Length: 465
Ligand SMILES: Nc1ncnc2c1ncn2[C@@H]1O[C@H](COP(=O)(O)OP(=O)(O)OP(=O)(O)O)[C@@H](O)[C@H]1O
Ligand SMILES: [Mg+2]
Image 1 (tube, protein in one colour):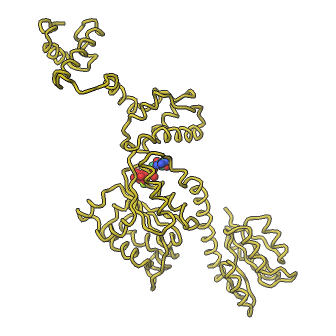
Image 2 (cartoon, protein in one colour; image 1 turned 180 degrees about the vertical axis):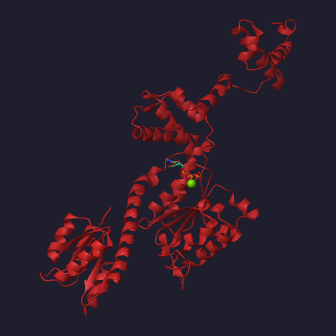
Image 3 (cartoon, protein in one colour; image 1 turned 120 degrees about the vertical axis):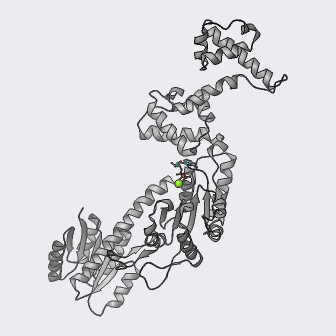
């Protein structure tokens, strides 16, 4: 994709120099305007990555006006002001109004080239951020957190009381309980929502990269470091840094993290000074951190730094009341995504869903609903469309549910014997008294079946066939 550049400049020779220069660089498309008015017109018609503008031009519209116009249109376009000697004060005013940089004439082209590259980089970063923020913001606010169970209400209350503060939050819970979703919701409900949300999976960073990833490096910090790179902390400056799977952080990095949390300063590799960072930390883990501390895999001091405001995500099996709501929500979601007709969940299907224990929590329910929506051809989700793991459990359970159990007066052994006797009789009846068939129906060996029959008077003398 060609990057679009606009030059607003009254001096014709300079416009020509620009044209040759941009052509030589390659990868850019240049528009030129000979005065402010033309500049504003072009800005209204096109999206530019970078605008270079002279400060003083005939016709009364100045570089400052061009800059203000750009800012009224977008925050993404980067503006560089070109100034003649002696008007530096105006250039500084331009910086205050949000220009990326200013260059004094006469300038060297390589000086300009460096600035152009940085502008493009900034533009890229900003547009990526805007894109992510837009998708995320619509996806994540407290409304996107489904649940009305008492266990979820506790979570909501805690979220609300901590969202607007800068307090460090530790989100705990099994896999798939919504730790990440809650963290995003916290960010987008905080005063930092305009800042970046930087999510790091601490379990997925190569050990050798930890330092540069977290603290960044300056240009030339090591061979191959052609550009300065901000670390996670600087990327999250003014926003939120989400340290996911914090339990996976190696001990030597825990020491360094602790230092930053205490001092709120980082020093990029190769930098001479520390840089202050204003970052809100949210950490999450599915590990029991106290146990990790006991086993000396997690530093106790770091644990206390992070455990300022813990939020415990309840497993789904402890808030079964939320299953219908979640199931319906995911049904809607996947119905739209996969263009299916299915609208409702049949009572029986819901009973099966309610009965399943969900070791993978909400993520598992979500996957189950996606599979089922794909399998269901009609408007009503039937049990046959559920994955067998959900449907099977129920068949095992059904017999017991129908038995409506209570404590047996005659004691457990006698009671179980009676249940066994009834089931044997039932199987024999089904199998027209063919014992091999009856054994098959009960999924026991013929030997075992005969052995069981012998316990009961009615069959004790007759165990053949
Ligand atoms: N309350 C909820 N309402 C709607 N969707 C939810 C809810 N909680 C979790 N989800 C969805 O369930 C899935 C798992 O959630 P998430 O990734 O936040 O879990 P996690 O606890 O971070 O899991 P892991 O420990 O495996 O990383 C996501 O797709 C998320 O959107
Ligand atoms: Mg997660």
